[in-house]
Amino acid sequence: MESNIVIKRASPVHIPSINAILTHYALHTVITFATAGISDQELLAKFQSITSDHQLPFYVATDEEQEEREEEVVVGYTYISPFRPERLAYIHTGEVSLYVHPEHLYKGIGSALLKRVLEATQRTRIREVLAFMAVDVESREGGLGLRDFYVRWGFKEAGRMERVGWKLGRW
Image (cartoon, rainbow, N blue to C red; front, side, top):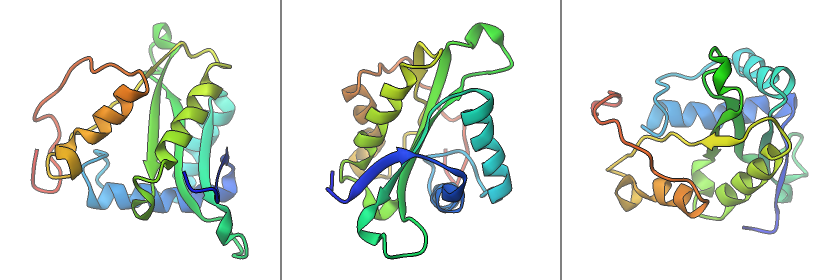
């Protein structure tokens, strides 16, 4: 990872930058099945639910070389959210979400973020972390690079659902 990248706890000030990354992936990729962006207020509510209500970790990667700017430059983010929170039996299971700004991919930022969020998760009630992903066969490595990334971190592929999401004119 580049030495100027710092992983830190996310705060409300990061919400607009996080939302810009999320909106890019929602509008231009099949990595998320979200098909539209959300408002900063909606994302702030989600952030507060994750960090305050559920006491789960939420981190950003910032580019410290850009510190002369008024606001920090967020180049990625990750968090653990409750898995099926409406079902009490899942209370010890979380779901990881991780996004890196498209101009900063393949630089070790995703690994640094995942390492930090998994370490922080050990200090919570979460005992099992799940990672769900869409396989984009038109992307680098035939869409399996993301799966391989998670496997390197100890995740196991437990199943595939085919043709369950239609986005950008394809399954």
